[in-house]
Image (tube, rainbow, N blue to C red; front, side):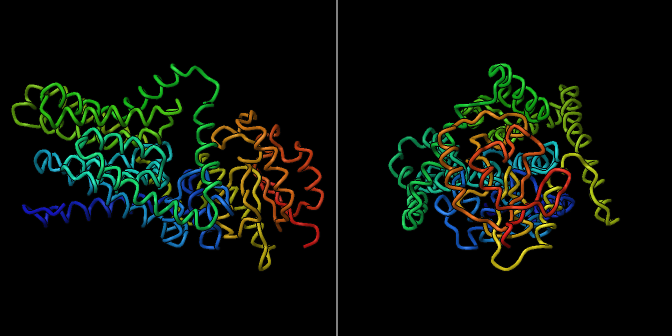
Length: 482
């Protein structure tokens, strides 16, 4: 990735990417997003001596939690600095693809940085498994494209330890270097073998299989009840419309240039879209898997449009691309300014998207004002941010209600149908053997059908607790004998 032409220009470019990303991310320094707090909280529990899958329910591969543990599991500005460093590294990795000229490489890195900062409703993409996976994803495909299957396998294995959809990264690498399948697979198995060895040494393999794979497969097999084909089409078109600049650039490439470089990137897009489609959920964060190849294709296509002759012949297309880039900037840019103004004035954010996070802060403050050394916590609902803000230890393996109700967190505010009811019943029975000092009920008010009092075994268990505080969306209980 060393630039022999103009290292100073490259250095300034990436320092700018980092500085702009950091400034934008710091606007979110008083916010935790649902896709990051779960892994941050798991990292904190790891620092407290808990082993994932054995001492703590965790339905994702381990690497996101371990990374957050390695950086101390702190929210606020340290988390946002880490965000900016990681996003800059992702952009630098895509810049490293020396397929075309430096113009295309700068475009690729710049477009990726732009969409990683202006790509979602909250206008910040949390560092969760889907985003964590981008760096090893890009590195793996780059190594495969350069004919280095063993290194490609290593990076694919790291991607898989962030997200099970890393298997699609391995598949793309296999397409690029099929003659080197043996070293590719060997590289893939090394990081996974090491991780599984750590889990096996602690007796966590059974939990890993049940939580990551059995729960994950059940989740993917039970998408929310709606028209699957229409949902897939609508969400894909929505995403492509919002990323119209990339779609137009990629279309320009494949219309004008059918060389090897564009053909294999098209295959990369197809394989990545298969990862997006797995489970038929088509959530916005899933499309991150498609972002690197589409950005790479668009960078070349836009460079072709920006050539002197091409601009004159395709003036309308150039205007369309500019407008397409303005849409996300105008849509999400003002929110950064509002948040920055709130921080500068020392006032709370008034934004519906952060209502749950603010309620969790209030619940955590109520707990902090009453806790004693050695106290433990259980949260009913999906509020891992309460664990981040209090830094209390989970009282048992179960620290949120997903494995206890059987209803995944992405639908439990409006749905009450479990995907694994027998499992959930066994887990509730196991939970009653624990005795947390505090229970934060962050679900019963939001979805009374999943009220903690609606389960007979938990109703009896709750008799040992009394209400000590309330927030608009949560009820805080403390053990009666504390």
